[in-house]
Length: 417
Image 1 (cartoon, rainbow, N blue to C red):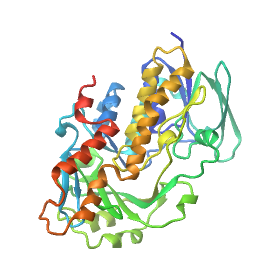
Image 2 (tube, rainbow, N blue to C red):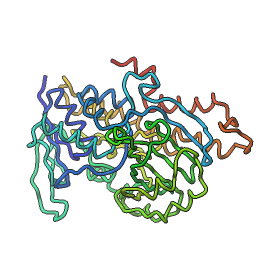
Image 3 (cartoon, rainbow, N blue to C red):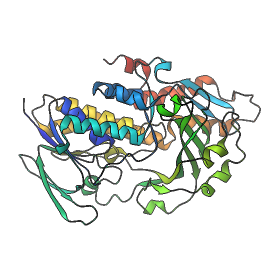
């Protein structure tokens, strides 16, 4: 068996997951991150059961359970609080593992601490922005710069290079220099976190509205729940024209209440004070909903893409991070015991590229959230507290089809050991 060593460009969620997965297989890898200090940034994300199943294999479940919420249910509503579709999630749905709602920064720190402990801090190198690479028959050399000054920061040599450097990936740009900026969906997102009294059972996720105006919310921190509060991650989404197609995606721009709150003033869910949710926000970030077109090829010799660098997708379906975890685990499994790097990278691409392309395109059609627009388009306004204008079997078909497409339908997942 050959002994390989790798270079991972990007110390985000996917890059660190990959480092841990490779380490578990006895494969050496070093992570190079552009920022000088990795901080717990961002807001809420979901870890769906197929990713949790893999994170459990990495021995991370106990740490995640300490800080995250085990999601109990997902429901879709109209803006007046009428139920469209409700389903249990995670353990409540009969999965062998939970579904988690977690602060992105909390999850990032869990991965970072585990990577530093297991790989050694010397293999998590910050302040190194990946800029270019050279490869030959024997290996690949990655070159780095200081992102602020553009000064050279040295090079690293390995058997393979993985670009897990995000939606604005430098490695992807090298492969596809004429691709241009991410594709703007026409939807603007305002994301915030608010600590207040729990809604529903305190572990529920909901989405309300339709394609042009939508609210999503779910609790993300167990510590707040233990104090009788709920640390709620929320997303207000509104369709607006923008010049953002010509700009890079910036998910950390400060958002203003006046940009979106007035559009929700007539909403009444009955069990959540939406005005308070917005007004009491600890922070609000504004960013465009963007993605990138599926690529015809990820792997070039000893170099390949992973996570958002390979398949940045809309957040519909709450599936982006989970797909990156699957990328990392798939690659590590394929490399374990392999003798040919280039063949392994090709096999990884064959396993993941088409699957993620289908999910990306499905998310452009709003993924499982399609049920809300179906009701908006078809409801005659005569339904009761629960919408009956569309048969429940039709709604269930939409939900089940997406789970199968994304790889987390219960029967298939519980059969995996």
